Image (cartoon, rainbow, N blue to C red):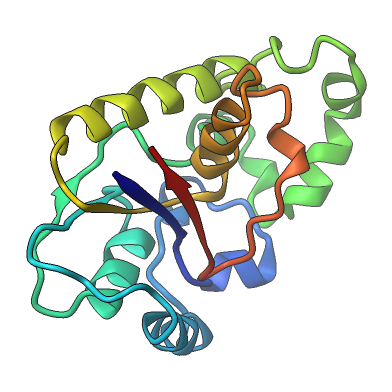
Length: 192
């Protein structure tokens, strides 16, 4: 089976890098729509024996709708982005509204500089290790559910793609996590 991991196209929050809590599930920006349209022309052609699985987040669903117009897709619940705890964090720290992701990470530098940071949960969120392990489990479940298909397209987020690529390289899902570059509206192919 050929598995094509696709990162959704750009959103307004990806451009501004503001933490947005529940509002972080924004749709594509006008630039993101253009990126997805360009990407559509570079993907291998869709065959009737292929399947599509998509993160439930709006930006991933909109990207999939542009890439595969008129095609139905399965929702891949386990392949959302890492929960850094922004919704809960913003409810408990309302003064942080409008903070950039970089500013948020700087405020918690001790967390990010710690050599055990993969196992430490984000403030109000989950750890990178837990997230990556769960993303790989969700990925394997989705692949098993589509066994026998020629190609499985998965439209998801940066975090799950990095975890899956790390796992595919024979590492723990978080070991090579930061080794992979995953630009918006890009794809990676795994052959099994």
